[in-house]
Length: 116
Image (cartoon, rainbow, N blue to C red):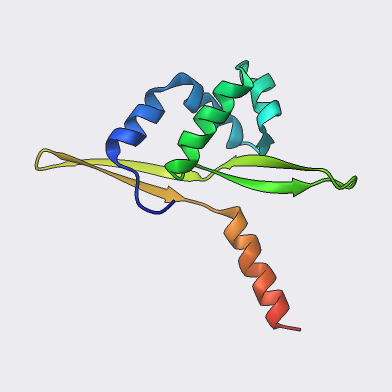
């Protein structure tokens, strides 16, 4: 995510029932698009469109998971820990607090490597 999402973008996403369902589902555990399609009862194309929008706003993150057989699949997990909306002098301000397990893992890996 290059810059903070606009309040309009975040409000539009959270107003969308499909985006909310995907965000809620991925807050429990990382899931593939196929799993999300089945669990949320929506088409794969709808899942991918909403996931792209959620990623653009920094609300979900994708990572590649490699299976024992060598195949790989992207899994998605919610990154939103807290959303704060403030109305100050006629303007909305949206503040996202995100928790990134991917960054925590990367930091741990760097610490391990440097310790060798």
